[in-house]
Image 1 (cartoon, rainbow, N blue to C red):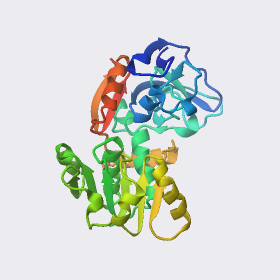
Image 2 (tube, rainbow, N blue to C red):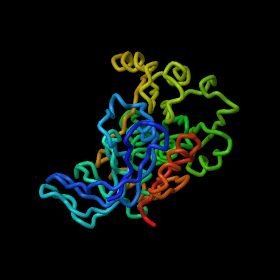
Image 3 (cartoon, rainbow, N blue to C red):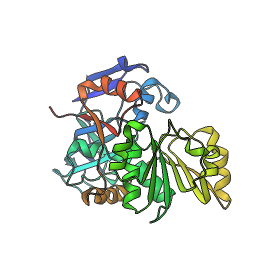
Length: 315
């Protein structure tokens, strides 16, 4: 089968469209024919070698985490799926393998693809959508009427976060550049702040949740704009936030938290219901073929994508 591999760390030039052995499944796994995947920044950070202490040096290394596709074979211990089911999920990016024609995945990480999404739309959801979902619901304990600020609201995680927060009947304030204000308003934001004009951390307005979907701020920079029981959530585990995260864990008042999405099938099902109810959709910036993976990585590295960058295996 065809798959994207790297045999050393480096620039987009190390990406290879290679022939590798088709995976064999274990009793608790599914063999999935992948129809689409998507780009997450962790993918090219692994490729560049930024995470080599975790990804190691056992080359070739497979890349790709998000996937949507159809089950070709189910292991003998799998009871809740069968061949022909259309599913979506993501795998540990350090394991990789979603930039490929086929993949073997644990059955207990997958969920049925939302009926009103095609494969490309579904592949955009898992990492970004679950990051937003688990940050706001599990960590932020979002409730109707809560006031939520989302920094980086036009990105992959941010576009899902604003829709999820609105579906939870929260008041949503987004932060992005002026060129994306119309899009963010169309996704349901009550107010949009242009970060080139206003630094929200210096304003007097306070929020129940500050979700830093791009990891550009810190708990200390956002502390003054949090309400007395407010929660700051970041997508990046930066060292500067570590002391406040540990300290606020045991103390009353404002909290500092970090989200690391997990491929929880229950959360995928809940998110899928929001999608099927028309409350959440994928925002896709560009779609590339698997053979164009280098161009897709190069575009993602620019940091200008609005929503998600999708990879398709279909002609």
